[in-house]
Length: 99
Image: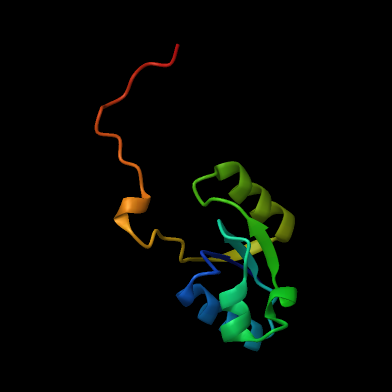
């Protein structure tokens, strides 16, 4: 069964990847980051070569749909999150119509 892990290059994600690899899976990871240093550190030096890595944003429905279709994803572990509220832009000015 193919598992998609969002936010897989974060701390919790790296531990989840380690567990999935230990269970014999080849997980698909979706992350804004493209440097798997934490996965390497926690799951082993060869771990990045044992996952399918896709760089992308979980808010991009097109990427999510493509990844699910192309890799036959049957399970999702959603760990993507911002580390700091200051990393997120908030619109306080309301909406304006598109021209």
